[in-house]
Length: 175
Image (cartoon, rainbow, N blue to C red; front, side):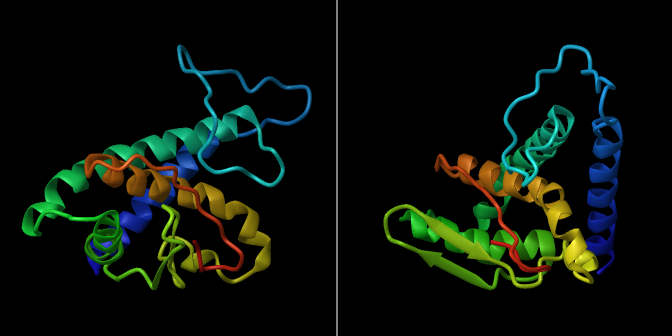
């Protein structure tokens, strides 16, 4: 239980720190870019378009998650047999990876059998504290970017090229 709380606090601080450095200062003020860094498209789109700083923050969070996902993808499957199909890899994500990171299994895995998979967590741990009001719904993407990177990094290590997006229709559920 302590590990879950520590991870949640670390994640919250990463988001807060990146948003403090890349927040949109308002009209007429240049946000400025950090030396040598390029803004690239964010993995999660925001409803209002978002500023370049916000897109960079999402990209940085997603990149951190990607690297952590790569490391977990190298270490966790050593205990399991080789994956025969893509669906086996997704089942691994829903069960083993999710338990290792969030101490619970994913609630649902759906597929159209054409390469598109939808993973659903009805009580996503990083969104539970925000679930008290709809006003926080537009803040959800910044709390999902790291996890999107985590999934993409794990899939990459396991040999699957992917595009990972997240959506939140109601808190704390995410797909």
